[in-house]
Image 1 (tube, rainbow, N blue to C red):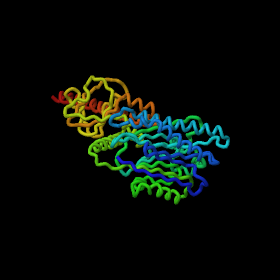
Image 2: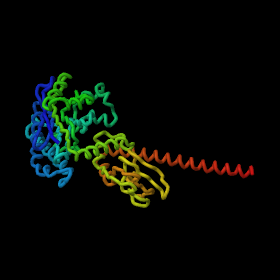
Image 3: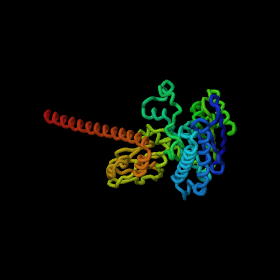
Image 4: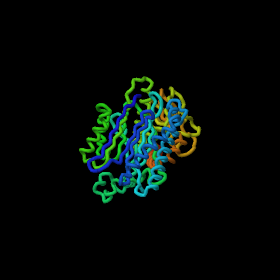
Amino acid sequence: MELTFAAATDTGRQRTHNEDNFLIDKKLRLFLVADGMGGHAAGEVASSIAVHEIRDAVFNSRDLIDRYRVDHPGVQGYEILQVLEHAIQAACSAVHTRAQAEPDKRGMGTTATVLLIAGGGDHLRGFIAHVGDSRVYLARQNQCHVLTEDHSLMNELVRRGKLNREQIESSPYKQYKNAVTRAVGVYSSVEVDTFDFDILPGDRFLLCSDGMYAYVDEDELPKQLAEGEVKEVPKRLLEVANQGGGHDNITAVVVRVGETSSTELVPRTTEVSLKLEVLKGMQMFRYMSYKELVRVSNIAEMIELSTNQVIFATGQPGDAMYVVLSGTVKLAKGDTVVAELTRGNHFGEMALVDRSVRSLTATAAEGTRLVVIHRKDFYDIIKREPALATKMLWSFVQVLGARLRKTTNDLSDALHGDRHGQETEAENLFQD
């Protein structure tokens, strides 16, 4: 898949100098936006140091990145994420050291939002490392998704339910609208968000500072990123921001992933899209953002089954949950078919909670594709992602609650039916 890219930056309408910096390294396929802070040009220094330190650290690991292949992983994805995290930590230390050495730069810092594209041929994967309130947008299939979370005071208040986004402009906290809760260089180290995902043909990315996304219309962004020559796109976005007021420095880095005619890539593209579509439609994952769904998709394995192939049998230990992507699955107790499940239905979810044995036998009634989520991977993601875990577990409790209510109602109906049958029999005996 061919990559094309371009970038632009501007001081904006209300600032006297530009504290934003960006980087595009074509050979490394590395893209970076840094929005400095600190006043007296210290912010510009901080963002410049961060950009160069991150680039150098990634460059020093280029052999590892070159060895990474999605189809033949001699290097695992988490190792690439570690490279990016260590690169931001190196930048954090360098900015902090400079600030400590120069009193007029004490407290300076910067955001750092990094996208690295790695892999070979048509099998590309994106790796993001992020600190602060700059952003990465993904435009895919005419939909817009934010792949980073703002480390800002306002977003933290929204996340905790103290206010909603519509209340920000009228909130007494408005004066702190630009305050960040994490930055590179304010302290000697910083917590870094990392994230990896499949890149598909036709994907479009925008990396930008808050001076840009304040004027982004997410409904229009997919069209804006796709129109015309790529080198003109950042310029047009900057014009939109300046026409809107240009309240801050403005930086936009645009990356386009080319379409492909590779027949080998079509099944993989379909698989990625289908997994996300089915997971999104499930009650268990209904509260999740697109980014969180991608995290779940990353731990989900796809398997194909032939007609009458047994998925698991009664009495076997359970260690995975299944979701039907296509085909039909029969659940049976002995010779009695209890249920027939089709696309979007899930089963075996109790295996995510405990190690109890299977109470039913599951069999593919026809050629069937399933998504499998193993208990170990489920617990790993819960431990790493507390916010995602809360949403997932809350939905999981609701699913189990609905199952319990249904079972209770079924038992009640069965019991009522038995009583009615006994009463009828007694009446018949009396009449006889």
